[in-house]
Image (tube, rainbow, N blue to C red; front, side):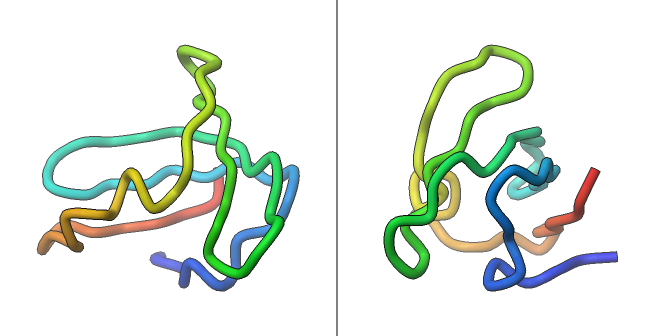
Length: 66
């Protein structure tokens, strides 16, 4: 079941599907509203949520807690 981006919580793990790509991440920091710092669970890289959805939300957009 899809959840809203507003429901992300620090320390929780999530899976994002968008445009056929899947990302598993943990929320590390939330300094400002919608400025989430994420850590990829597979590569351990850090990136921001807006980098994942900057091209919009595809028909398959799904965000779920894992």
